[in-house]
Length: 249
Image (cartoon, rainbow, N blue to C red; front, side, top):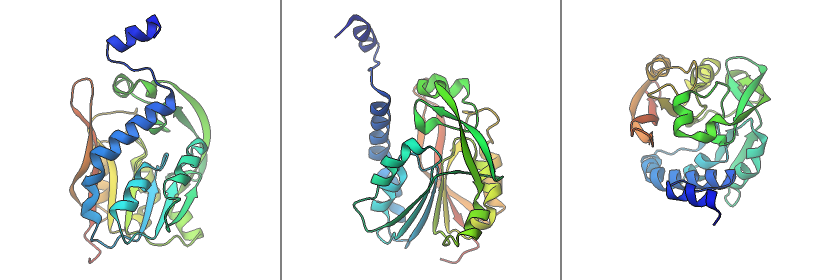
């Protein structure tokens, strides 16, 4: 072990390649939160929209939590994630369609901050708070991606009504909801990553996103899991569960 690595090791930092870091956090996420989604088991979830699919972490987990699952539509603009995303459910009988663009409130080309730690990639700029907790979020390059309104895409391609819509878009939640309100209002459940601190510049607050979903008929049902800061142990964000009260179960 060279001197630099020894020094890093002694202060509790392991030197890993970028992919190894992501694999580590993915395993940690799966082990910690998989059981929290078992409440979906008996709800007859057949169709899922996975918005902000990254490398397929959610798809891989939800296929086991929902025995009636038939179809997943994954939306992920970073093409480097697609090979892993394809593998997430490859050994199943599920219909899995990958859509290589992001979702927002406009149909446009836009720049994304492609972070070294790809789950932190966002159209918004990472805040100092996020970079302090996830150093890989502070190392990024700008890439141009395509963004579409969910409602427009759903109408053009006869997208099936979803039982569950998952949204994990790193501060772009309000734009996704604005561009997909008609589609969202037909879903039975939404699981959305909600912030309790500003992790991205100009990120909507928990209350902002909560009210947007509330106005579509959704009620907050609790959290399936939450991320805690490694610096001060405060809760940074949570995967919040919302149920549509306008749809009879």
